[in-house]
Image 1 (cartoon, rainbow, N blue to C red):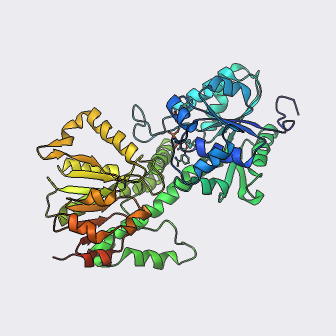
Image 2 (image 1 turned 60 degrees about the vertical axis):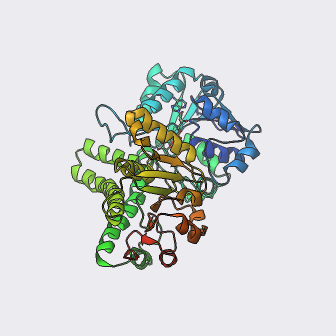
Image 3 (image 1 turned 180 degrees about the vertical axis):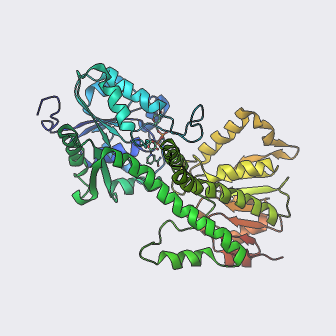
Length: 479
Ligand SMILES: NC(=O)c1ccc[n+]([C@@H]2O[C@H](COP(=O)([O-])OP(=O)(O)OC[C@H]3O[C@@H](n4cnc5c(N)ncnc54)[C@H](O)[C@@H]3O)[C@@H](O)[C@H]2O)c1
């Protein structure tokens, strides 16, 4: 094998990750922790984010992350803004930059915006002086590796690049557990001698802590597509049970009982069958729309329509939740004060990207309700969202004659005081253990409780005096 392609002479690996976000930071922290002889550097254009990674307050909240970072940082884990130096000094480069939905031009609202990814490819080309294995960690449309190869090889082949696809399957909130004990690691490569050799290098890194039988290899296009399909399947289960929840509400069936009966079928399984206000997070909607766009691009309109339905049901479920609130509260929300329990898109994260709570809050504000937001981790992001509303010219939403329309309160019991209703947006376990008798007494009567996650004890809350509206179950009211 020519020396340009031989990565096997390296005993200690020098690894770079471009993009220090929710994926790049935790993923590299776990690699550094598991492979003390590898030197891992994470770089980002965002200097504020890098200094947070170098501080005591990490930019990402994940259970277990602090301990892993503390163990490896300064030893074999480094965070830096020196992208050019990082590219020069390292042999294995993960690309973990954001790939949001395009907001402009062709494919707006659907296709992946690949500008950050392409900029990274061009930077690797500009600064690389020695052979590199370039690994797609970001979620990308199938066939993106081809574009990566074309950019990297556009200089005429003086430096060898091998491109791999290694999509990340971690879930926020359980990222460290998922990274330390993954269901599977997927590595796609070109099936050439050089591609297979590069794939073995990455397999050997993961094999330090992941059992070999859980390290799957495939051709590069299958790897890229598997990530989009995984997220589409996960979101599809949520939309399926949420669609059923609407029917349950009309028929006095109980969606929890239906989900239990359905999920005990071994072919179906019980996970991801909790009816809720809908899915959020930066990935599901974006990745499904990306899949839909790909299908349309290839002329597969029926396949596109099938997957688009998963997103449509999710939008329907969020809107249905707000309309149910309004119907329950005498068809008017104007001037009513509503506490939102949780603003993160799920428990155990501070991430609010695409959070259903954002949708609900904006709809409530549009109905001229007042919104009190509480969340154990997401208040900083909630404040950024509120600031964004002001910047978008929605400042009038904040002021009524009676006072500010959006308030942020850390203590959930205090958040509910003086409210007409509580709405559970995020399944934080702490909401199960609150003193609801005391909370009830501080609220305006009749007090309403809308459980958007079906996590509270509805019978008990009803006995306390609340009018309780779960998802997919008959409401428990005092009228
Ligand atoms: N968040 C998740 O749960 C999750 C899970 C699996 C896969 N993914 C995928 O991983 C990718 C990253 O997601 P994320 O949630 O970490 O995003 P993020 O926005 O948190 O982080 C991306 C980072 O990349 C940086 N960046 C952008 N362009 C850059 C450049 N040219 N050079 C250096 N840094 C640059 C940004 O400043 C940002 O800090 C996306 O493709 C996403 O779809 C995310």
